[in-house]
Image (cartoon, rainbow, N blue to C red; front, side):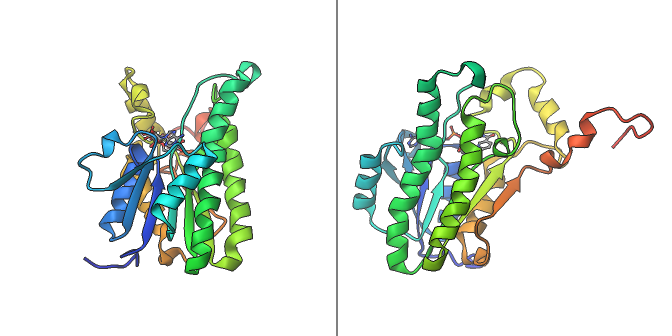
Length: 253
Ligand code: NAD
């Protein structure tokens, strides 16, 4: 197999590696020859995957420290663990707000800085965080989710600034709509899958692999001059704003 990405033998930690985008990213990196450790608070689904699995709740500082002690330094971190809780900001319970931020934002920070230390000793590395188009576009009943993703995008830029001199890059990937266990129930509602497919210029909602391949590129030295970037992987969906309002005389696509 060609090693165009130059990932052979690189050590990669992938959080949320048990499901959806994280699992696809872990498998893509492994297929490219990386030595992958899939981290999740639920590792049972990793049985039979061929991936090394490590149990860790990324929102716990002591658990992340213990994880780093167990597995040692690595070259790549993919932060893809995440949760979503519906609700309007005007009445979101602060306990729910805190619970979401502790995973989607604080957890990403804990994992990034813990493993950045080892990357510095190894002469560099790559951090890739899975954000969302929700970080740049408001959506109804998003609760703390959109705010967590917006903060993540800037946190990644700050990490890029702080860690660039040590040879560590930090980027976000912002998926649009992706069919994963997190979102599968939306697609079970009548008509949702078809309407969502039609809303995307590419003509379909993403599958986890569509995101994982971009993650793998950012992990690799092929992206050596890319840092502080937010790569939108949404099939063109967020570029279509003006097609959602009537414009008499200009109907059709
Ligand atoms: P998923 O639910 O399929 O996978 C998320 C994984 O994270 C699960 O295996 C879960 O056990 C793990 N996890 C949750 N909390 C954890 C914790 N505290 N510690 C360790 N592991 C934990 O979801 P997904 O759709 O693959 O989402 C992955 C990332 O992509 C998330 O950050 C999500 O916000 C983002 N995202 C998803 C979509 C989409 O449409 N599915 C769109 C944009 C962004």
